[in-house]
Structure formats: C-alpha cells, structure tokens
Length: 138
Length: 154
Image (cartoon, rainbow over all chains, first blue to last red; front, side):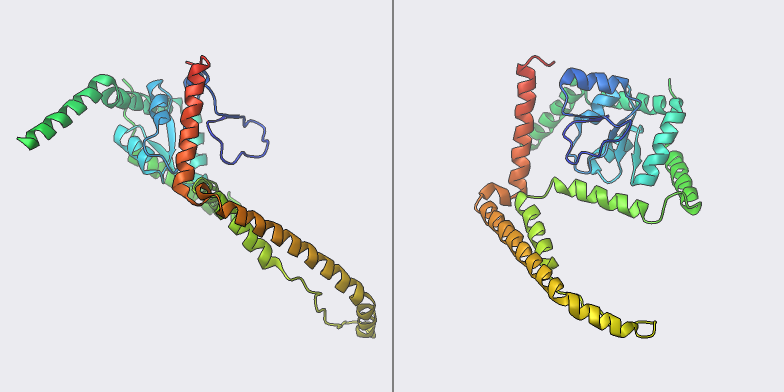
C-alpha cells in the first residue's frame, strides 16, 4: 500500500495498491493494520509518520540515507533501515518471517515515542530550555 | 517485556545475506545499479523545478539532430555483392534523403515548441526556484490537511 503524496506512481502491479493521500482515519487504520511502515523518503526533517507508526506498535523500516529517520531508528534502538534494493528485500523477508523481531522493534519504538514525544516530556524539555536561557541572562 | 533488538547483529546479518545473494548471482547484472539510479531520479524529482525538466527535454531533443542519411559502405562477402549494394544505394538514396529532411523538419518544429515552452516558463518567477516550489508544495499540503479536517476527517 502506497499512501501519501506519490511523486512517481509505479506501473500497475499485483499486490501494490496506490492509495495516494488519505484522511487521518484511514491513515491510522493503515498504520495499525500494517506489518510494517516503510519510509523511503531520503529528505525528511523529522517524519511524524515514523513516530505515529511506533505509537501504535507497528515496526518501521527507513531509508539509510535519510539523516532524520535514521537518527530516530538508531536512537530508539528500534531501527531497521535499508540502503538499496538488496538490503530492502532481505529486511522485509526477515520482518515477515520473524514476527518476534517486528514486535520487539515496534515495542522499542513505542517506548521511544512515549519517553520523548508525549506532552509531559516535551514540556519538560521546553522548561529546561527556558531555564537555560534565563540562567544565561543572569 | 520484549527483548531489545541487537541492531549491530541485525545489520551484520542483513549485510551477510546480501553478500551471499550477490555471490550466488541472485540479482541480474545491473539490476541494483538500475534500481539505485531510479531511486535517485525519483528522489531528486521533488527538488527539480519545472524549468529544469523543460531544459533537460530541450537538450535531449537538440542532441538528437540534425539527422543524416547513414553512410553504409558498399562492401559484401559475396561475389558481385558490392556492385549490388552500390546500385541499391544509388536507387534509394533520394528517398532516404527526402525522409531524413522530413524528419529534420519535424525535429525543428518540436525543438521550437519546446524552446517556446522554455521561454514561457522562464517568465514565471516561481518556476525557477526549488525552494519556492518546495514551499508552495508544503503550503498546498497544509491546506489539504485543513480541508480534510474541515470536511470531517479526524
């Protein structure tokens, strides 16, 4: 399933559904039901959808050349990334064959989201930043 | 509690499997390079401006012309074959020349059309700035998000 803006639609292929841009309800349904989310973009500055997938315990596969998503993958300890067709094929096969790996990866990702991107931790970080700025002015 | 994922071990395992498959000739020659090049083209397309695309098309068309009648050497491994080639060559050369001239006129018309499009796009200030195109696409995406919310999507 290809969801979101599709820059270069692939030719009709059995098993590949090009959904394009979907609304929020459909997006969350897709994320919850997916075996994995693949984020192939090499130009992300943060990538909400990676965190959204982890928040519903769906494993994520990112492009190794994207600094932002690769950082999420490494910092969370949940990361699965590929750098070309061959590694993509191997990781997808591995994920589909080893559900425990997917579950473990997704669990690490969910812990990462809970620890860093829920309001309490975000507000704590903002508070620390404000404290640092104020301390610097004294 | 799920076991932590050993990323280093997993990366090594993936690299090992890929190396084994390459060594076994599982991927047709050139497939990986072709797919990598395709990805780069698709990924970079988002950074291209409309003018970049038209510039490339104009260059490709200009590089094709002018067309000429190929100079085929009248040689043959058969006795008398070279003479036959010369006779046939003289017979068809005028038709080939006419066809090539017609093709060159078509090529010129296509080039002129593309250059006109190029000129029209050059006069659009937004079409020359990747940052501006990117910003417009971002705004478009945000408007789409607002519209989805207004239309009742959660």
